[in-house]
Amino acid sequence: MCGPPHKNPGQEATAALARRVLKDHPGAIIVALGDNAYNRGKVDEYRDHYTPTWGQSDLLGRTYSCPGNHDYRTAAATPYFEYFGEQRAGTPQRSYYSLPLPAAGWHFVSLNSEVEQDAHSPQLQWLRQDLAARRFKPILAIWHRPRWGSGAHRDSKKARWFWNELYAARAELILNGHAHHYERFAPQRPDQIPDPHGPRMFIVGTGGRRLTGRTKDTANSEYARFDKFGILKLTLRSDSYRWEFLSTDDRTIDTGEQPINPRGA
Amino acid sequence: MELDLTLSEDERHACRRAAIILRALAAGLKEAGTGREADTCASYAATLDAIVTSGECCSVSADGKVDVEQAAFVLEGIRDGLDNADLDEGADFVGRDVERLNDIVFRYNSAAGKAVG
Image (cartoon, rainbow over all chains, first blue to last red; front, side, top):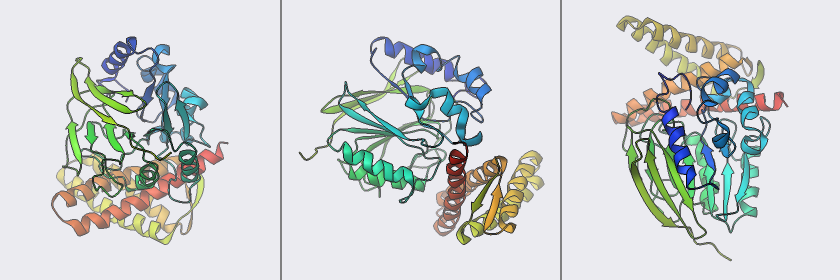
């Protein structure tokens, strides 16, 4: 999302907005959805474009990320992994990770849509085990390429493997980037049949890079904006979650709340 | 980073078809007067051609991998355009090739991660 200002006009404003929001939420974390430094995720691009905005210590110190396709335009996305560090990004060898969000009682999973992710991949086998071990917790998962979308890059079939596992685990939330707009979907199954207990997916590609327009109406898309830079604020509670998409002019563009999915004892 | 990848027959066919589409697009863009984009699309096609001709076991460079990914993005646009025009069969056909190209990209990235370890 950060790069030369003429191609990334929203990066300073979204970082400033995040800072304003965090004043009232000192325990909150930031989730970055990949392609954080354009155009190739190089060391100098992180230094020159990410560090002055989203990479300031008050924001970077609480940021957890997943890698994007532009990060992989360097060898094995090494600058990306070194910039965020193992605890907040994984490593080139093991580029997916999870962690508890103890204050909320949720489980957070960061996946890598830029490497192998099919049924027999190490990543999917790890995901299965990770979700099985935390099956009584509400789940928030992130990765870069969305399964569906109404803007650019609107159909990444590979992500179905993540969806299958997360649906089986009754995950609540999926956050993706890649496409440069905001979009919220109704809870659904991996085959796009609406299901109130399926994951709710958001595309939040509004952190700085030039926005792109609508290309199609997608099934189960409940709300989309193609003209606002902003951030998604999620409030995770033990029994529910709330979302607010905030634009850089301090307006709440989209908001709602939903109970977490029922789980067996 | 130069890496050796084993490509399936499906993947090599996808590269061949993608190169054909990209060359046609490059020719059209050139005739329409957008030379730079035409040359870029032609260079993606050349990378895909090289992959096809190298056979089952193929050496892919970092730049070559980016070319394959960019080719997949161009094909995504063609897939989406066909879909918008309700030309479903063509959209599905191109969409399958996009998936195969992405398989190559993701396998390269996985191998690169292991190689730097």
